[in-house]
Image 1 (cartoon, rainbow, N blue to C red):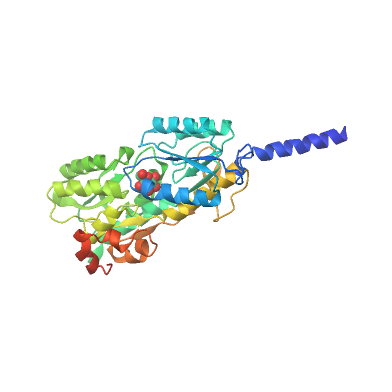
Image 2: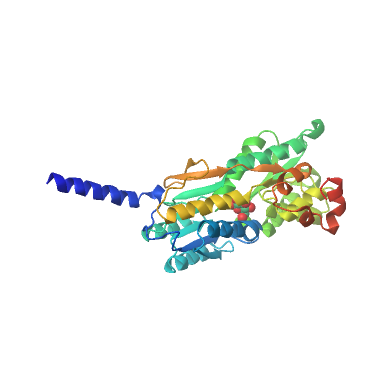
Length: 362
Ligand code: BGC
């Protein structure tokens, strides 16, 4: 009798271990020696990072950590229902882990629960999906917003200028992306009370075209001469806002923020069309995700970069949060070039050759 209850206790311990959410929900039959299928789901392709950096960096690291693994990749083109069916198809094809950058973090909770029911662990990538996710890797997204807000405030206060001499326009990201809420909160924490916010928008789908329309409306509402700066949450929306100002007859473009260090944005920094962007080193982000995915699929505990706990409304998720860096014309060389994100040749095409020389880049 005593013996059997000890055995029962041991069996329960093993069972609870293998379903423990932080150690992965894997069935335990995935092994690096034999290889297995890994599903990678990215949210959109208008922002250049996903196809240019996230996907290739992730694939390279997964190949290195698990040479026999196969990566199934899908991009949802900003369509939440499409992402749901992409995930279902991957589960049907027998993936042993999902790396998920959610279009809509709440809706993606369904994907996470489905995966969980099939004992497939989920690594939330860049955007924290709801549901019982196993791991999360991203940047400190509130900090991203603070860095953007501070850069804009500094630019507006340059040489003792009054940052309340006119209005700024705030063009935030998509309301379905929890990162967008963090960027917005971080920016407000710096800007509120220090500047006049004339108009503010949340931009569905992070669409650059919608950002352009929002900026056109803002110019009409505020008046061209009163617009002294633009908080744009990323480089795509910054591009839309700048196009609206150029189309609206601005002779000089006031300071505009951004994020992602897209090549077009770095070139706009050089010509003065955009004031700043945020460089987020995507290589370590993708590499941490790859390591988390392999650990979760094989029933191991991730032990790499130092982790923090971040709550996603369902649970506290073991997370790695990396540090964002502000980039202006003055530190392009010391950031994105130094890090090998771009070569000078990629940035300094014929049209930007002079600006590159002036900035000491070529
Ligand atoms: C990412 C940004 C990106 C935006 C639009 C956010 O979740 O963190 O890097 O610009 O989505 O895709």
